[in-house]
Every structure is written in C-alpha cells, then in structure tokens.
Image 1 (cartoon, one colour):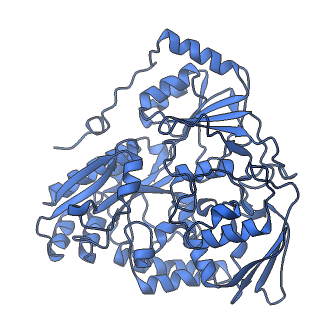
Image 2 (cartoon, one colour):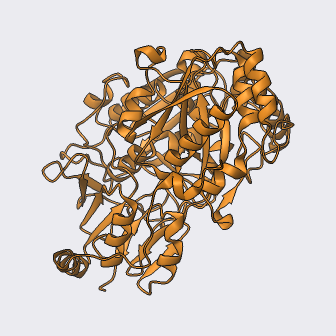
Image 3 (tube, rainbow, N blue to C red):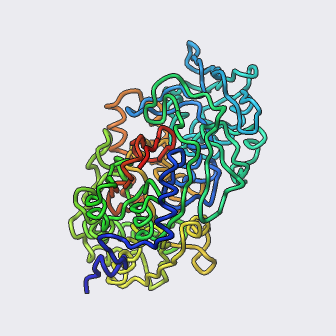
Length: 535
C-alpha cells in the first residue's frame, strides 16, 4: 500500500491556529518592542563551536557572535571583512594581511594577529577547505600585533575564496580558545562579531539570546550578503526553539515570534491568507536532501549495496512527501547540485523517474546482503528529514531489506552519527541530512564532497583517485578547466556513490510584515541588518 504524505507527517492543519488569551497578551507586549526580534531558525544549536561541526544551526550562531577575515558578497565574491589591507608577493606564495581598526572581543580585549594565526591553524585542522589549504602552507605567522602572513609552498589562487566560505566558517577566536584542538569544543562564546551571546539568559533546548555588541565597528561599505557593514538595528535577538510546526505558526500569527526560517508546506496557504504575514525565499537555493551511507560497516561497505540505494530512490516520490509544492521542489542528478556552472550529466544513467527497485534488489543480492539490520538515523524534530527517513525505510523493506529507524532529536543524531562502530555498538548505516544547494558547487569547501576515508565527513567514503581530482580544483585556473574536472569527478562520485540525493527542497520562510531586512543567500541566516517596525 502506498504511504500517504498525511500518514507520514502526522500533522493536523488548521486555517487559523487558536491561541489562549494569556498567549495573545504576551504577543501584544512582545510585538510592541521594536528593538527585540524573536526568530525560529530551526533547532537551537547544541554545539557552539563552528570549527567542531558543520551543523547549519551552529553556523548561524557563529555568524552572530564571531567575525571573519573575509566575507562573500551577494555575487559570491570574497570581500575583506576584518582585514583592512592585504597583498601577495610577486611569486604568489606569501600573503600579508593587516587587521582593520576597531576590532575587539566581547571581553574587552583587542583582536590581534596572534588570535588570527591560532584561529586559522585550528580551522585548518578541522574544515575540508582548511585542511586543503594547510597541506599547501609552509607557515602561518604573526609579524606584529596587527599583521600576519600565510606562506604557501606553491601558489594557490583560491586562497582568499577559501578564507571567506560561509559554510566553512573561519571564525576568529581569542588565541586561548583557538589553541584548543578542534575535537575539544570551545564553549566560551566570546567573539568579536556584531552580537554578544547572553549567557545569563541562555536556556539550553529552549532559547538563546543575543545582544547587540555596542562596541562593534561595522565596515563602511553597504551590507551585501555576508560582506560589507554588519549593521545591527535591534538591541536583542532571541532564537526560540519551537519544534512543533503548528505551534510555531500559531506563535508567528500571534506575534510571539517574528520570523520562521522553514515554513512547512502544509502552511503556505495559511501564511498567504494572513494579511500580517509574508512568505519569502530567504535561503534561495534551498537544501539538497541526501542519504549518506556508512562506508565502514556492512552492508554499505560494499559498493554494490551503495549502488543499489542509488537505483532504489525515486526522487519525485521523496519530494512529494518532503516538499509537495512543485514550485519549491526539484530532483537532483548532479553532485554539484542544481544551477551551478559545474552541474553536469556525467554518469547519471542511474537516474530514472520512479527509480528501479528490481535493479536495486539485484544489486543488494550481488553485494551479499543476507538480511542484516539496516539502521536509518531519523531526526524527529526536522520534518523533511523525518518523512524522508520513514519513506526510505519503507522502500527498503519492499525489496527485502531489514530496515529499522533510529528516531532521535537532531542533537541525538549529531552525537550518534560520529560513531564509526557497528549498529550493535550504537553505530548506524544511513544518515539523512541536507546541504545548501549553492555549497555543492565548491568541492573544496563542501565537506559532503570529500572522499578521504576516516578523515571525511560522516559516512567516511574513501576514493583516492577522486581525492586527487578534488585537490586539483585549487590549481586549475579557468572555468572551462574546472567544468572538465567536474565531469571527471562526478563520473567517479556516482561510481563509488558518495551520497544518494533525495531531491532539492527550496523552503520559503515566513515572517511578520513588520520584520524587514533579512539577508537572502544560499545557506546560512545572518541576524544583522534586520529591523522591526511597530505593528
């Protein structure tokens, strides 16, 4: 029997959510304060260190409290942020950077070159782009309190772009924090960014509060993407954790919150019919959902089992349950996502509407699958991930696989996905997640596109030939060369099956019309530039 979307998501939709009188009174008091905004950016972070995880929620937290050396503008061009002046030697091997005036940490200490050096080294040991950079770096060193250098072993034309990647957040920390290994979390939450983390008002699992950093000196350029002046127009931003989607919509309608990052598809018509609310594409490229298999454990340590999953997935079916509005849902057949200059059709013969379950069943058999348990991590507080996990389990069972869901909130998923052991010891076989569409066009910065074994992102794929091509991305100089390289990489990627895409979901956000200035981009959500009118 076909599983319906209604059975899967288990949501009851009402045209107008009923709220209690005390709740309305709280909302009226909240909405009267134009200097405080309340936002729901999906789950509040459980990890606060952007060098320690690739979680989008941690990235949004980091954007508020930390600053970066460079920022990417709305056209994808890297622009100086904390840097005042910089230059490169004639042989293109030594880059010299000078910090701009007015930079200070939230504890009152100035930002120095030593802080930058320690932060770069820590980031370089953790992020995929950073590791690639450090492999080509002879030294990162301080010249004086405001000046530092990066000395390369060989020219690297993409160096500035790598320092600016928003999803590879090179957060500049205090030297004493950055001296911790990236495997040990920094929990001080003291940066030099436009917001300060309010430790006294922190309610883990419920809400986090960010206060305007009154001493922050924004750049003079106009705000442009993650570049330009980071101007904070409110005194306080409160990130609420409301996991129940109907409750979140009710709070938005009542004015208890001002912004809901991900509006569930069932609520689009409700928002569009409310004169006080507005649907808006903030994360313009949306998220590319995927199933990542565990390469270290059976059955997916066998390439034929991974290829079976590639043939099994019918993306249109997954999109019907995860993103049913065709305006906002698109299948994906390129490892570089949709709409990238590098998106291509190399080695995509596996892609078929309706999938190919018989082929999948055959490949599982050839892989020697003998009914072992297939554990799928299921994030119950991420609706699209939850329904996708349930549907994948159903599809696997149809071809005879012993699929089992491991439900947990996202914090539990983050903890369990790091386990490399067998399922009997708390491990896993399939992890459902998503990546911003725009990030897939950058194989240096996108951790999902690594294939360097146990040093890779969760799932730990390994393919040395592919990694050699990926490393060459930083060396080739022209767009045409990169397009040719992209085709070669994609051919290998779908041979060893680095990930199985489930589709691209472009989820509009919902906001009260009194809230304006949310910066549109293809991934993270900065809280600067937002303002709130009386309403």
